Image (cartoon, rainbow, N blue to C red; front, side):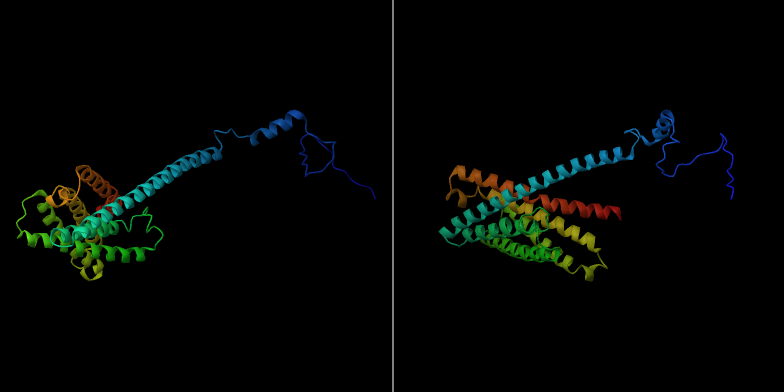
Length: 277
């Protein structure tokens, strides 16, 4: 049987499907021309931009981790300051007896400098004591600490106001009355925040919680500033040296500043959320 072959012309396209034949090889110039489109300049490659973004994100991540480690360190330092103030004031007041001014000084120190300082930092993300707890657990600890702190602090301030006949003219006394009033308001707003679903018809829960944060933070700041001036009262001067009073003032201010980082962040986020509505 005769085989019929089609005539081969110069216009016919020859397609190589991967054969190993060596007869029909393209010349070197043609192969180089066909391979040129496979090379993409590095500046035009999409991976170059991806690598650039990865480098930028890595830099931001390293900066964020460094900031978190710094905040952890500052929180540990703050815990040491709180412990020093509480232990030393407890030593002075318990040694001389918990009566009159001694009872007042011990209650306000335990209430404001210890319980309230720890309470306002419970929800702080870089708190070394509570960062591993769930939010519900943090909320429970927060209410317990602030209830104890507000009760002890208000009771200590009330003892001194009764002792002085509510006639307080010094800077320490006036700030103490202000802290007492803010403490009562903060506890009231905290109770309203706890029952926010019941009072949401009158005040929105977000606004009520923001108000509670503001009042609690203001109470804490005024209370520690009051304690700062308390180191200049006759009770403390008669029981400590000048250099120790300076040390206690510095430690109290450091504790005030470092304890305020978490509440300021929380208040900022709540105010920002309210402004978006």
